[in-house]
Length: 98
Length: 423
Ligand SMILES: Cc1cc2nc3c(=O)[nH]c(=O)nc-3n(C[C@H](O)[C@H](O)[C@H](O)COP(=O)(O)OP(=O)(O)OC[C@H]3O[C@@H](n4cnc5c(N)ncnc54)[C@H](O)[C@@H]3O)c2cc1C
Ligand SMILES: [Zn+2]
Image 1 (cartoon, rainbow over the protein chains, first blue to last red):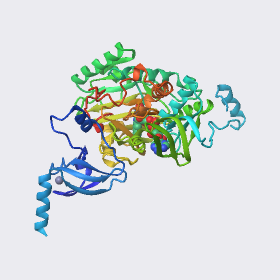
Image 2: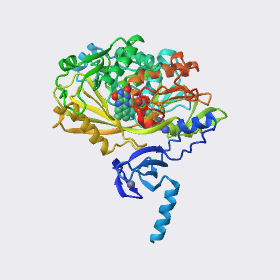
Image 3: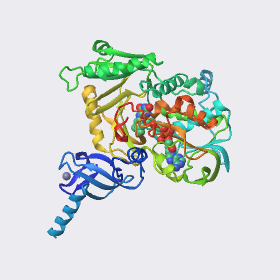
Image 4: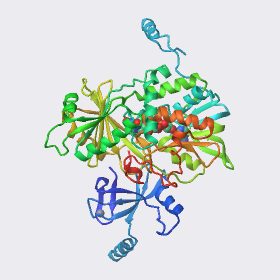
């Protein structure tokens, strides 16, 4: 079992989460060219090693997270909320706590 | 090397089995080959065999980083069928099934192909309609043995499934392909290896490709753990490792993700199940057959998250066991003997690639998801044809990397561009 430290709920089994996919993909603007959309939708680096990927804590807080994970060892290096606003709010809160 | 025959088996039985010789050579790598195939799984070995057998080519090597059949070739649940409905796929898989039907004779090697029927259970009127449409399509496009069974026929044939009317997903019938079945996976790898070796192909085990040398838009040599090997043409057939080789060639991204799929075998039982039975409903997926040794061989979905580790995770063990109990409750007290996992090359539409690449003398065979065992003979057949003639056969022209640019997805499951959702 992989264990993912959810920033909202704490350490949880991965079976509570749903895997999204490659977290490094940036979707182009809606009016971008067909080629740009093709690349974002269909092409992947498929990294063997450390990659950023999205997971949703479906059976927990239901937040989407960006997880930095090694695809060979399954070691998790960092976890943050996928929503950039939430990520910075959380960082501020943690700073205030300290 | 000895040809297998009833007489030979009998004679060696009398002589303490001392008359057999090695099945293939273990040669030292030569500095140059006309064609180098990377990957000694079923697709690589079949390709080498057909290059020699169909096209009379000789100076060929197969490079395998581990041992023959140590990848998905020896890890799969060995289901062979051709019940595909999308244009392109159905003709390809039917051709493969026909090659399977003669494979033991062609190779003079018993691949134990057992056409025991593939029985896909149906659990709702909607599922029966959808299956009828697909199986009618098969009948109209050259696959004669597609049948829809009603509940009575199914009960007569496999009486011990869970037919409880109050089951969560009550069984209502089945979509059946009678010429489908299973084969002995190791024997297929060994048979193709032996046939290729006999025709002059060098099979180089413990030979890992670690770097690829290029000059402009062509590959010149491969850096391997057994030295540099120069090549006229290079052909990848490395399943879940495709993106790694693609990167070594400096080619960037692919419409492929590597995932892992598990398989399971129980302790051996007396004969219990004569068919391949498949259950797929409501997010569940399960397939089971009984091996010649008696073990129940079964599997389900992939582990859901991308991975290069060839080891499985526990939630799927639970998932698959639950599915087993829901359709074959008589397995409840049977012990699991082993489970393992393989590195599968999941593609964006669930369909494979047999095609040319941006490099002039590099060829690609990949994207088999978890259905590439049945495809092995046709995959080798068409890949050899592509490499020998440097142009795709009419039948495989949509199995190229550019199909998404043309707006074409060959998506049997209708799952969309997400590799983890295909099968
Ligand atoms: C658990 C499981 C169950 C399956 N069940 C079925 C089924 O029931 N029916 C079906 O049709 N299909 C099934 N499949 C899919 C099928 O097994 C694969 O699609 C098929 O075997 C892939 O082709 P292959 O045999 O050539 O791959 P592999 O056997 O994986 O061959 C690739 C080879 O490339 C080698 N390689 C990798 N990198 C390098 C390198 N750098 N240098 C040299 N060599 C390298 C690897 O060592 C490996 O031996 C299943 C797969 C799995 C994992
Ligand atoms: Zn959470």
